[in-house]
Length: 226
View 1: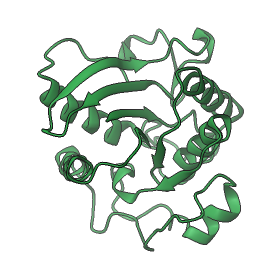
View 2: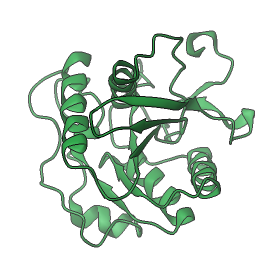
View 3: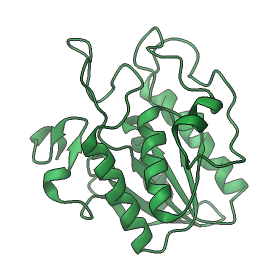
């Protein structure tokens, strides 16, 4: 099985509260025009490598929209998965999250047989990154136990994509340099039934023009993102 995963496209972050963290935006922001373009580049790249597998995304707007655009290019559909949602960074949930019916109204490429239990937002207070890592690890273990018939693309957020990378690094025995999770950057691993992995791409973004590469507002070349 080939497991790919990508961060969502650039969200439209106008109207964020003063002092809020752009990497962890407090709300359910849609994609900006640039984010939609990034998702289109991602879809075109996946199409060029012959991807026809299962697309699974966090139910947040920015991830669902990224998945819907990529799926449209690939002639595919996507499924929502709450375990890929962003780390809960705020004590009080900043949004209720969309129901399955709302996702279906908003994103034409949601799979007809998609399911989603509501509410799906992570319960409790502020999450630690280790908590996100544990839920992502459990999800990967489930995928290995019950692998789908097709290859997989997961679309998540900064924290969940980083957790996926750490999981795959461990399985692949990779100890080299990491790369920043740019918007729509793509990683890929060959994942064996025994749980071992072989990496073939890491946070790749060369399918987009450099001027389109962002990290939730930060531009490519920002030293904090290298």
